[in-house]
Length: 347
Image (tube, rainbow, N blue to C red; front, side):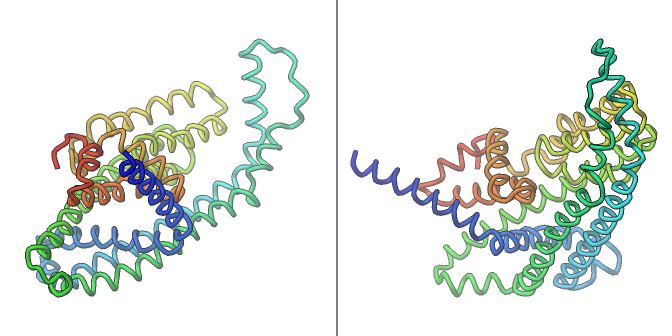
């Protein structure tokens, strides 16, 4: 009994220490983990380029570097577009001040309140809260922090890619035991397959979702449709709730742009249809059981990683938890934890 109590105490102390290290070492650990996950994505992308004429004949290392350059360029273009769109949206907010007041009056009328409360110019107050001096610094700070992490992660990824082909020989030299070295490399390949296939399928689904959302936003006449569609696609990396939360933004835009609750309601219904299709049909079909995590594990991981690392942690919650589960499954004393984390129990 005493030994079991000591084990539980040591385990709790270890978990607290790991949590503290993850928070305190965020600036160091986060770029490293993003770099490692990027390598998984790049190796999968490099293999996908094999059927491409001419490019497929390049050595594997050059295909990986090409994938890295294309991915970095894509992130740079995306960040620039989001920054410009945020600036345009912030500059347009003062034009909607009157719309806020109209919405206030219609809302109170619908409630049967004939006399408008003395709240002053509510629209002007709300616009002042969201003007360029408050909205833009937040957007630019978020993009700047994300860009800093991506830049550092790119440097880590470059050096990891340069050493990737020497990893088997180095593992054998470090472990000495060929059987153990083989198991270690098999574990690395398993993580690569699961994380690479999950992120590739998730990205494809997000692109489809963003395109469908863009078409709907365009048809609804909502301003800045490309910006909102990109936000919906990016937030869909957060499992279950990301893209649904993202829908709130264009629906709010519809409300203040058209001052119509009916138009906002129609926008909400139309934009939620692809979210439900993605959640209940497309993602299960494309992703399947690629990471084999139970829904409860995903929700718990989302809460934990978001608490530790904010939005970045929410986006990386599934890949990081899948890596942890695979590693736990290889350790006999912790295999039962991996079984409980899995969706099917089969590892």
